[in-house]
Length: 267
Image (cartoon, rainbow, N blue to C red; front, side):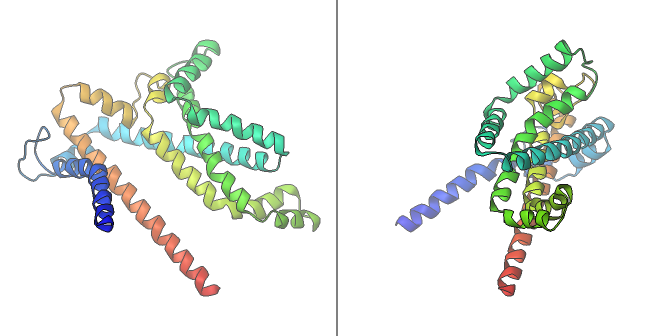
């Protein structure tokens, strides 16, 4: 009975998590204007998604923003993690504590404070993209730090010290010894940064130019309007994002299993 109860509980959790998404995917392939109205099969929502200039520009702009912020955040987060790892114990603990604050802090506070600092105090134009990029970097960099630090702790630090003893410059040893060993953590941090940037709403709301919309801000504004065609096209956009995420997860897991098998064969 305990076995069946455990299986039933897992099934209920999976239904709770995935049923809403599956319903959304189903309706994205119909001509229904609202959830609950089952009509004929159609690819109209996907045609609208990829042929409407407004939607296409919004998607491209969001992707460019996410990639730009993720690159900067990955560089800063990785540098911070390496600096913290090779600092003294007290300095490292202090940096870890400082990094936890923006992770726990509410996004609305981060977005509002960055807007005040850059726009009000420093006088940077609200129509520029600098506050938006800075806000997303501030959001993502601490999570990159958290992704890289465990890999640094798993690393064999004696190899880096041996490289220095053999005459390698610190920069060369960092590039050829440390970076390859923590590369998986850097990639994980980069992927997490992209996800956080794509998902953000509050920071973008406070820092974005008036003429620019991310996927999150556009979806919220579109659901308040009366353009049914745009609303249903967003169902298709949600489906595309979900499928891409599933493919990435499957690929990552497949690659991880394949790597483990190779290591077992070598062992």
